[in-house]
Image 1 (cartoon, rainbow over the protein chains, first blue to last red):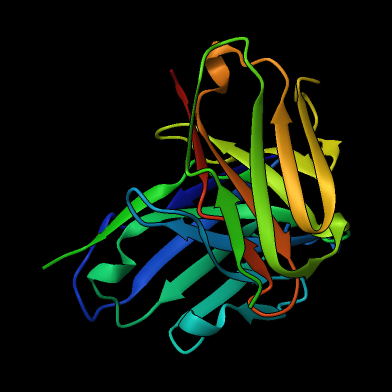
Image 2: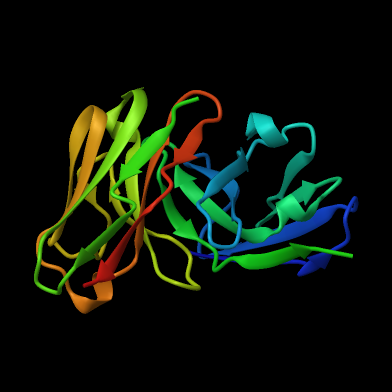
Length: 119
Length: 109
């Protein structure tokens, strides 16, 4: 299983950050996994953003809930992140990751993509 | 929200020594939902331990996890040069579902 993030590395303040995660070797159409986005500001720890299930159901961390949307395209084996009204505080490495439903650990991660919010 | 506090912040040890990393939760956590990750500079986190004590595929047996309730431990029995990294604990529970500790850096003394 491999996950790969793609999207712009630079976003202007107040605009929308959009990233896509492409999954290979596994299926986003499986009921055994959640598909999550996690971020890590430079030099800091990990923050879980939200997940999507193959059915399309989602759950977001409360602090970002009013700005985040995660969607899935099972036909392309991709899931995506949209984060609106970004500020410099949203500058981070963004990871996509798969979690196993029964134990809820993240067993596969993308390599991460740095998104910088700056004018 | 369940807060995970890792200690120490930095652990300075020599290769061959034993490393003991602590993760304390602000509320009881189901052991099934506790995991540990290793992260090296410029890399994504790598799963080491899940279910508090089960090693992930391909993880050497010098890594072990233990604990229950609010106190969990990651032990590296004999540090190898490639083990110097940052380690994070993680729990799954009620909102915001997944949280991570702030990390423990294991550095070469």
